Length: 192
Image 1 (cartoon, rainbow, N blue to C red):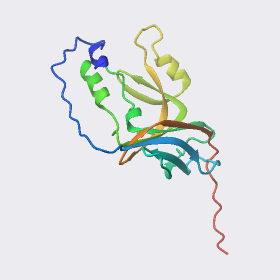
Image 2 (spheres, one colour):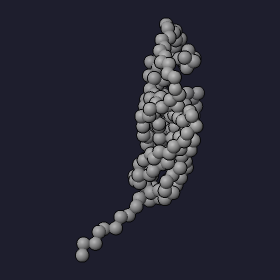
Image 3 (spheres, rainbow, N blue to C red):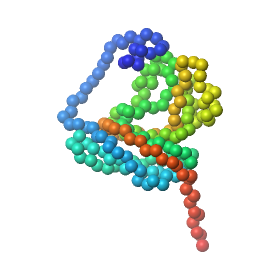
Image 4 (tube, rainbow, N blue to C red):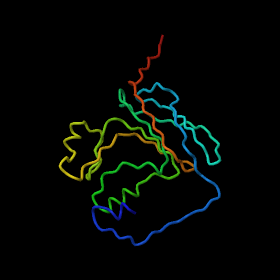
């Protein structure tokens, strides 16, 4: 509500607030305690397995495996893998240019009962009022960014994202940083 009432576009008036609540006598919350890469040798295009350690509300822990595909063009780059609950992640969107755009941006969310795994790459993009401009070289980023204005475009890191539905809410956020090696070269089978 603060973002709507303090927007830069027009005076917003709230006509009402509608909420629903469901009470359950359990705690469908899991805490993401840690993530670990199963194999430290990561190449572009690999399907990597992350081991997630989760703890439920009673204190019992269990481990799950999450598979993520490293982008094919991420060779020789440093990437960051972030795993968090759906409430803590937002889809990338252009900068809003009206109150309606702002409302759409605020409503664009991931399900609360989901796990969001994101691979951030060092290549940057630009979020402007006219849309998202992904994978821009540094020279283009500098020329498109409005340096003489108070409403500058926002830079964002490129990514690949996977959203996994869960039976419980996920609390916690963990990040791994790693360097990606060139794509694996597979030997041709010997036909002799």
